Length: 353
Image (cartoon, rainbow, N blue to C red; front, side):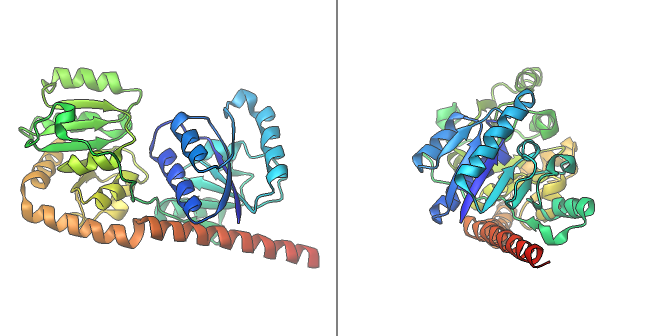
């Protein structure tokens, strides 16, 4: 099986992280791969480490025609069995009249107008695939493949590395610093979570705004802005709670990662968490923008050992059933094989007719 990945993701973010994780996992399964991608350093380094060839593209809309020619030539040279377009922009750059099965990936409720040259679709949640089927009326060409929460082992870190006492309780946020992520709600809730430190790992357009808010709320002694980090496993291992306070979150791979790491999860009822997290079974949920209940859930997850043990055990169970590297990679490979087989059948029928 030969897969060509067209990847138009930003440098940071959950979708980009899963794309790279999936490519690594497929490499471990001895799947032959090539990529057309933005040359972000950590992404390119991971491909180089595995001897996966790639061609850098900008995915700049002003260069669309010239870059579509590069994509067409790459397809002609490589002759893949399947083309996997990661994210909406990658799908929108897919050239016309390519006679190879093309899969468009949905990490959210995207507009299908950018997928006109994709014959197959993949969503990371059941509800996203429902959205796809409503628009395409093609359930036989639509696939659910979850992101996986399995994390590679990182160099260990200590709380003291971030100027946090080793015996202090810590709340970890792995998120872009963006309005839709609800970081301001978390900072306001922290006023009611005494003595706990916040580790906020991520970059984004609202980073400075949240730094100013932390100062305004008098939280500078307990909040650490870590910037973008690639050592998610190491950070989860020192955290007492993982929080996802999003206003909008189609899924949120950090949910599965917290389950993998056995770090108690607190989240808002954004789309992804609402579908997969069961309150007081594998996490604690609250309404979006509910500062008081978010604070209550954080205090419970930090201090109630019975609840902590229960949601850790429940999270491990959900992870093993749906979000392990093995389960997700098997689902991804099955989807690839089903698409390739379906396309062969379609071609045979077209020749016969």
